Image 1: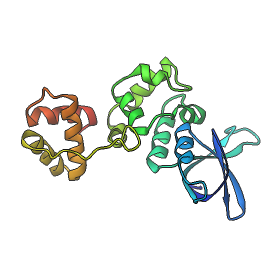
Image 2: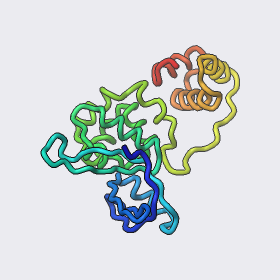
Image 3: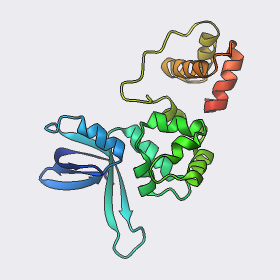
Length: 210
């Protein structure tokens, strides 16, 4: 299975890229998000993509092998997670990925059907099914991804009850950075919480216990 590919761009289209790899040209399907990212890169520099291989046509007599490419490994993981949802195929998952992964995941976690159903290939029923099957622990690593390119700001130093909550998370196996990210996000979403135990309760509700 091809998990990564690196080569020179021969042609870039809105939904695919052709890469020259050692004299062989590979056609790789792209989500809209990856296309926009690649457009912003230097076309003369080698391009590395994280790939997902599948057979178009499934069990048909003559299935066509296809590669889907992603600029980041996290994007590929999110695509694979979407594929686990009932009736969400490669085309639906691929075409829906027009948002940064962090923003997409937070829409699911917030049960934001309006945002989800506005995505290509995602109707109201599919949006609700995605929420029902993915909301919770499965989204943790994606929830802390930046919502926009370059949007992530340094975390403020946690103090007081927030520091106590972060310390508990570290004792449960989280790194300091991840613990502080979880605490900071929960505190921003619920500024009315002013105690470490209540904050931890909310964190566990959102992300599940570590």
